Image: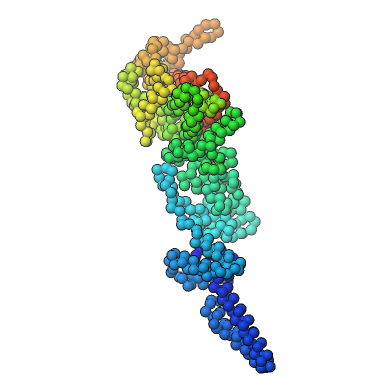
Length: 599
């Protein structure tokens, strides 16, 4: 019966039974007055007329009004007293009977009663939580006011800053004056705070809002609370005006399949829930209609999900562009180009991504992916611009992180004949540049990832010799890290043993003497003369690390150029959609100037 309280407690309408009693009593009182008047005219006695009227009023009270409860303007109390333990079915039947009893009454108050009761009867059952979009079931998250069991309008709700939780909601219970108030927190504590240090709480209708720009009170606490409530319900995407905010769930959500692609295609933003597909579809739609280039900026801290969302944008664009079938026989090449665009992702991830403290597949470089379209909306080419590759990761990683994926994938997944040719006879724990960090990622099979990489290279058009050259550089960097040096009495650096250096020179196809001379006693030009300079142990160590980083960076640049040449098409380009994936912030134990530039 809770749904009837707002109606009855408003004091604007009476309960139907009381109004019926009032109508009957009024009729009897009027009848008594008529009888008394006729009696007085017949007997010509005024006293008898008065007594007759009084008796009529008493009779009316005894017959009609006495069985009904007093007019206390709180009929809910009476109703609950009549059916204290009634079941939901009996209550519904009683309400239906009550509706029928007052259905013939044309009074406006009775109409209000019928509407209020019928609204309660027609209100649906509490919805059963639907199956989650992911592998786990989305929990039903109550709002603040359901948790506190307090009506929002009855209290003044505020957000109070908290050191650990960020913000805790509560309501003001006392005003101490001078901007000081006592707030009862959701945790059950009462604290005294300055009212100027608090933020206002939005009404319940703004809970889990799709667009935070619609919030009545747009403050940091309300934004964080809205994102938290949506995240708890497996809604990781939320609009904030023109922006889309994504909260990384750190597990796979089944919200990127072909059914979702079809659901978001050619839909207005207001017609569907917030999603990265909605952003991509809006860019594609605007490009076709305005004939102007579009760009999507994806940014955030390390582990925020930039790489994954970049992949989803490309996935969506290739899916909807593939539906624009050409009339000529160019359909086959267009399909091949779309496959190449998708195959570029595994290659870039293997050579440019690594495990960090916050993310198992963090992109360690920035990139601007430009997908070019023709006038018909088909993909006509693609281009990748890269910048700020995190070169220090090649030689130094923290204990909770890994080197670039390709090192582990190559050592675990490459065929034995390839590794024998490149003199790789150990696992990641046997090489300096990979042994001081994590060797595996939970739930990731490096061997399977290497097979995916090889297939992607074949799809993109890498020849076997080109793949062998890339793996040759990877092996050379591993051997270079194992080259050991020691200092002499004169503080000059010399080779401790030649095995690792010989393997390195064999893989690169250079002479050992030339390598050691360039590294330990390089020749520098002083004026017009060349002077041989000896190096200390620290200088040689820095030179080895710099050489490894430079080799990897040049290999990565050549790799991206090769991908661009495979996806380039000379003709048919009209407009493009650019996806800018900015590298995330990363604070390491030892931060070089290069890392500072990236951040």
